[in-house]
Length: 228
Image (cartoon, rainbow, N blue to C red; front, top):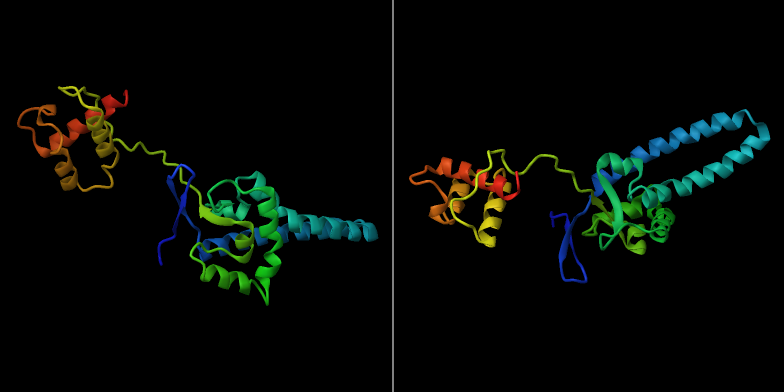
């Protein structure tokens, strides 16, 4: 029940994990967008005040347009993210993980009215609370879900080491094993890395090497295999 990962199966039979955003980040994103909207609202009031009756009519027209198009424009043309969602690292997508369409964004935002019933966001809150994918009524009708965006990992997963060719030719599976072990070095304890390295052919390593030195050699092999 605490797992916020939703798995989507593609037509090719591949399961893609989507990390669904819960109630707290969505609420925080909403209030950030609300603050932006209120700032625009007061700017419009100041401008309309200088234009008299014409300004008052113009204010209501622009207010109506901004109120309904603000979330739709950002969701459709800005990777499913309003400024509030972007600041929290979440975005709107279809339930199959594809980018949200204009029609889906329109439906989910129009139905904000239903989510607000009977008073401030009660229906939407209860809907997200009892739905495994934290969908509000608008998301259910539009076939959308709010997920976390993938974080760009700028850190090199393979430790820096002087590239060195293995003493013997490696099979494709052995090459994959060396690269995989090097890439996961931060996720595994040193003892576990040593245990896994013992599964590789002994002739790869210098004779009588210690376990710590064996891992350094593996990192050197990994850098050589990826062309560094």
